[in-house]
Image (tube, rainbow, N blue to C red; front, side, top):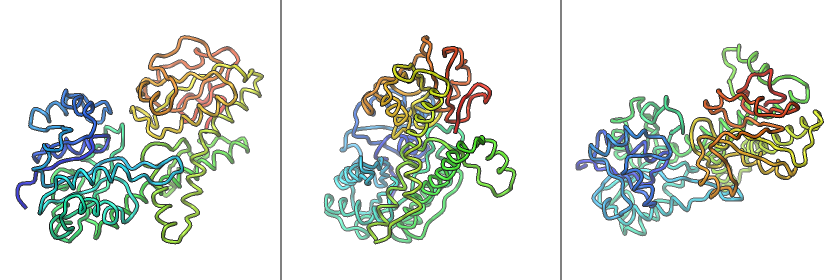
Length: 421
């Protein structure tokens, strides 16, 4: 293959860190359909905070370019698709972003080029759904004129320790030769090494079960927390004791949102159903985890009633709105389920999150949040996200004398909380 020139399509939480990393070794262009996103990146700032301003600006000085102009990616020969794969309101996989990205690839791909997909999908999507789009738009024949690969993303938003180059990468190709080529490109920048899977479908399946496994394990401890709550036992004490065994898996209860763990099991479940198998454990785990926001709200209301606090018209503070700690990502956050359930009780809810963008939250969820710590007094507080910035907050000082504190993350001192998972 001639000199590798890479184009990463989709410059979000996954695509940008990968493109920046590739740019240390190859001529790399980042492509995104959002001109405002491109302009911000070329000005040297990543609003997702996955790539520091210093790293991004250094990459740009060394030739890394971001663009929304499709003509500027036409001379690339190694295309990487890193667009999101969400579910719709009925939890059915939405492949629209993948179809759009595949159309873009089809418009610019040339003979001998390779397209690698990173988006999380069920086995078969790359070859059965995406490649036919590329073939149709380009007029080229798969595995004759152009080739494909799949290397599932392993980005952990907000994690500055396990960055993209420090997480082992699974790779694959549409032929053995292309598999080796794809593996060589990735292994040249991934410090943690790579694992070349025998086929694209194996690599797709490996990705989708990683998060499904984690989802099921969290669902198990969420169910335990409900059981132990009824028994009057602290779940965290139980987990601490059980963790003394060498092979106990240390999962913790909590809200399961985001663009991976809360979504990927539905991709696997639908794939199974299309092939005549009705998955039981996978969907049971999803039902358990999807109901935890409502459960937290309901348990908080029960605690308020036990303390004689008037629920109707009360003032409640939710600390945190992002789907995980120490990052601004609000995609598929389950804190919204807490909020909406509380509003059904006619509670006045204030959401404080120093990380989340209020404009993004209003656009995505239609609710107001604040980045400024409120000065008023509240009847109740729910610690929903364990941001480090919350360590310095004196939560009881923000509340009335008779109050309730519910700690979703077991983050606060136990002596000040009334309930926790």
